[in-house]
Amino acid sequence: MEEEYGIESVLAECPSVARRRAGLKRVLEDPMGREYLWSLLSRCGLYTSMSGLDPIAMANAAGRRDIGLSLVADMSEVMPTAYVTMQIEAANGLYDGRESADEY
Image (cartoon, rainbow, N blue to C red):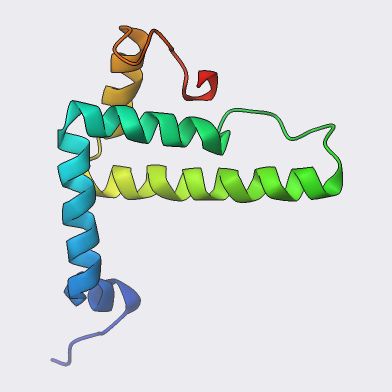
């Protein structure tokens, strides 16, 4: 039977993708790494409204949000519980008492 080579199989075999995933996992395993990513996600504005912005500002905000969503997707792929862990840590005051990524 012939093997299929879809994008998933190509990416799974790509050393640079595996290396990036391993690096992200390493960051997520470290509490300081999670705090840094929480701060980074806060600048992406995942939970902020884009309504009422002028078109240029809206495009800029949408771009930042897309990067944040991409990072959350990567985190979920590498370590499915990481984002929830970060939310719990933030709610427990481990990130300077801020409970939401948008409070940074």
